[in-house]
Image 1 (cartoon, rainbow, N blue to C red):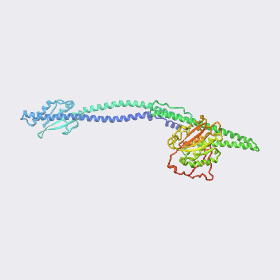
Image 2 (image 1 turned 180 degrees about the horizontal axis):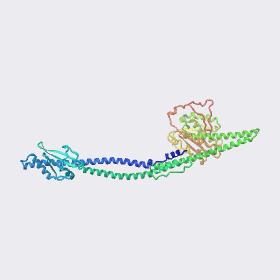
Image 3 (image 1 turned 120 degrees about the horizontal axis):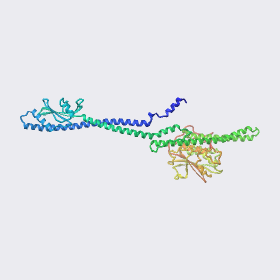
Image 4 (image 1 turned 90 degrees about the horizontal axis):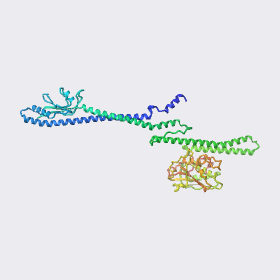
Amino acid sequence: MSWLERWRDQTATRVLPHRALRLRIPVTAVTIFAVSLGVVSVVAYSLLIRDAQQDLDVVIAREQNRFVTSISELLEESQRESPDLTDEEAVEAAVSRYLELNPGSEQYWTIVTLPDGRRLATDVGPSSLVASLREGAIPSSTPDTYETIDAGATIGEIRALTQTITVDGVDRGQLQILAPFEPERDEAREAALLVAGSTAIALLIGAALLAGSLWRALTPLVQLAATARSTQLRTLDQRVDVPDTRDEVGILAREFNTMLDRIDEAAKGQQRFMASIGHELRTPITIARGHLELLQTLGAGDGAALTEAVDIVRDELGRMGRLVEDLMAIARAEMEDFCRPRALDLVGWFEELELRLAATTLATGVRIEPPPPVVLQADPDRLAQAVLNLVSNARQHTPDGTIIRVFAEAGPPPSDPGQTSQVTPADGGHGQRGSDGPHADGSGATVRLHVVDDGPGIDPELQRTVFEPFVRASHAPTSTGLGLSVVTAVVEAHRGRVELASDSDGTRVTLVLPWTPDDPRDHELPDGPVVDADQEGTQPLPVADVPTLPTLRMRR
């Protein structure tokens, strides 16, 4: 590997500072919150401006109503006291009297413009407005309308209301009520800035707390990545620190350690498995090599010794072949095409099994009992392989004269499932395969294939590991120790389970297979050619430890 490739590998597994989640998440959150708070501040400022404008309009409307009500009364009073006054003089006298009684307010300024251009105004008013407009022109506005007008840079915006004074249908003057709007705007601006400043401080504090929390929460992920990067099959002892939390990161760290434990156990199991294979192959290879060397030293006239040596070499090669075939069957158990279920007529399958068994040396003492007339989904070849392995195992490990029964049951699970014990292989390979099947938990209808013998039973210490690879009884040194492992692989490939019950009165091995009565698939014929049971040239089913099976197909 070149230095460029090594640099690419290192940079590909290294988190850049600006791409780290511990930085990106706080920055993203702060940005979103800042934009949101900015929008909120603008909306709040607009609402404050609207409220201030409405408050000024209420003040102006109150002054307008007071002026209209009071000027009517004062106009009548002036006309009663001085009947000789003209309308213009009476209006002027009434306005002057009103302004004397209502000197004004710092919030607004009341101005009355007479027809001759003279202006009468309250003595008190907003200082900025009075100082600028007392000697200057009064800004005009639309009559009978609340309006915001711009009075220049010095005064700013003014909220104004203009109304014509009419007496007997004749215009006798003009009323203007002016209120500066800039103070209200300044107050709204200060309030909005105060809100924005306080939220910005809160945002910075929240961002710091968020960054600290994320830094602590995501630190196990960095350790997890480093551990994953440095973990190799030779060094599976590293683990990540699990935080004392029950959040997703803590769960991920715990599950990662659990995964490493499983990988470590599987690697150790694989090492033990390979060591067992080497041990199992070493003995027959050594024996075969020794007898081949012996053949070189024997003379041509020693025919008996030659025949014996050849037979021994042939037996050892056959044992190695059976061992390799069993290993291939266990390895293929992980493949999808290891088991090819199809509609299997149990009655016809038992008849085929009896015919094949009769052609082997295992038939003595074996009773094949008629099964119930059911059809289930199963691979007939693999199922025959499993049953024959069980028969061969029972024959090999029981004394002569032992009766072996093979029979089947169909229906709901037994009322007392405690009579048998479920076997769960612990070899780390296919031990859990099929445990999540439709009826593997004991619920629903099943087909139960039993292989029962009345032999002396299995040693209780051996029962816990009898289905593991390379486990054999001490009195059966020629066995490969893989036949029952193949049985477990076949049954679990059917999403079933194996049950074992053994004592001094005999041994019962039960293959529990899921069965759905009236399954429409049961009426489908298998693809490909159909081998008839009586067809000439049909190969017999293999005996135990020979997993290579002929195709066993029936049509009933």
